[in-house]
Image (cartoon, rainbow, N blue to C red):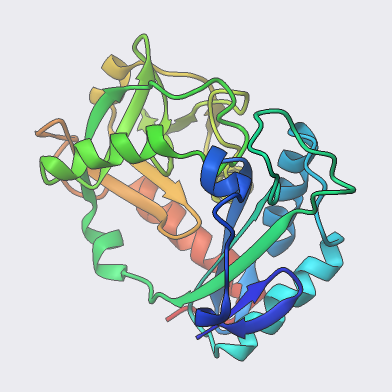
Length: 286
């Protein structure tokens, strides 16, 4: 398996990450995941734009331009013969010695970039069936709009879900639903779709942007409006979204079925609309 390490495509076992790397020691870095269908990236520009936006927010100097980064990611994907799968890439603030919380001078400490690919087929059966989730207080920091590699809060929430056999944790702040441990959250009530507005409490999801766009174009009412746990548990339909799972029905929350415990018609319509958007860019989805 080949990986991208700074500006080189090398065998994975050739990569050496220094123990003083700020990503390793301080979680000082950013990441993105792009999905490929039929060997073509979907929403690559949007993911790369979000990386650059996050870098600006934390004063991180990136080693490539947007076009240079996109070219290198495509080259890696072709090298590994990825048809349907994911490309993960991250950048840290580099190797600074001695260890110091303050940002180092970027002219003296260059960023460290890595990227890897994974072949991951679509799990259509799961998207038809749906998943179970739990709810938890959102204990993370207040810059969730930055896609930071510092994910311990998210990891802890996901672990709590897995301990009870659930697949995701819906997080809330004082009863207001924010997002999942690794997904954006949605509910449907009386034919209207609701999702938390973008801001510092939620990640501006790329799949979320696509779903909002296709829903509005299809004439489905959408409100980017916060909702409560109580409203969530009384919703007609609930679903989560991310690059890797597209639109995933949620059929059980905290052990209680959502409606009849099956994927609802609005979620099914959104899934079909999303696939159509993918196919317009990447060809037939299988």
